[in-house]
Length: 341
Length: 169
Image (cartoon, rainbow over all chains, first blue to last red; front, side, top):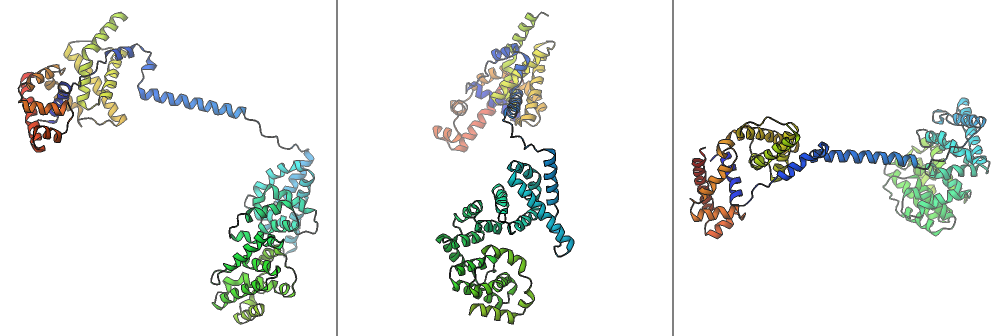
């Protein structure tokens, strides 16, 4: 029996013995023939048409929604003179500081130019808050969030370290608008000066209580203000310093903070950590710590307060001058011994 | 031809051939749902594009061709699995065995079933009427599974020979 015979016999037996006779399709076919052509389309085509119709309805709905949405607030209206002034300030503030060598007279002038233009911009924003959205639109997408973010950061830093305390409120305006773009040491400096928004910014990560290196500065700040949580975080952090792990500047910040709280032993412990690394032939890894210890050693020895916010800035800028001296292991060990004893 | 007479002719065409087309499509491999759909599509195609009705044999052949083409489209577009790889060969094998409309084949089968032994007819009934497995049939008849297979195979061969003689295939 071939496969055609097999198939025919199977179907015939199912019909004769199983009672599976073909259905009477005549009413259905005749009814379908009387319907309009578009209704007679196969189910697949009907489904496609339904999907297309739904897509059209959806697109129409989206258009209506967009059209009926409340319009965004209009941008600030500046007079042509004001706009020209702001644009000029922005253009000057965009001078790429990163390529300027501050040691040359030209570099120094350019840096001063950026500093002055940013200062003028900040003052303008403070005087005319309605100008701020305009400045934000034109300046910050490029200078703060973009590739030249460090330019603005450094400029604001210079401004924050300037002699005029009145600048703080100006910087605070930027801080409130762009809290995530501010470097932590700048935030700390503003907090030390009593800028409420900076203090709130510091308190936010500290509230979590995790031992994240980014919490060191906030912890120091709060510890120095008598906050026991801050001191606990510092001690916990110092207890976890592994003599064999890479020394980090935040270790120094912890030690400096604890020293100011009257804990000289913390300072010595940290110096011992640095000496362990140097004796293991890993002076380079311990270098930030060693340089920081040496730099602050006179203040610590005399019991003078060490500005916490200065730790970051000065470690970054001032670690190099004594580097040659520190390359001599014998002299380095002697220096560290003097710190420990 | 008036619209009324065209409708009457179409209605007659549907009533005369819809069952045969359904069986033919099932033979090609369509399940009941697809066969129903394909039969309707075949007649609607004929309704949209009428053909010259000649003798009954030619009409059946034409309708089968239209139905086979619709089934082929379903095979290609919906990945339906046909019963045979070569549908043209299947079509050529269908006509002589089915007696062209399968009615004579079915009539012959009913007669031939009476020529089987009671045991063989009972076994076929359990499989095709009750949907029982070979193991279940073996239990009911006191046979091993292999014995059931042999019984069914012989019964089917008997039916095939008997039906072939009666329909002249």
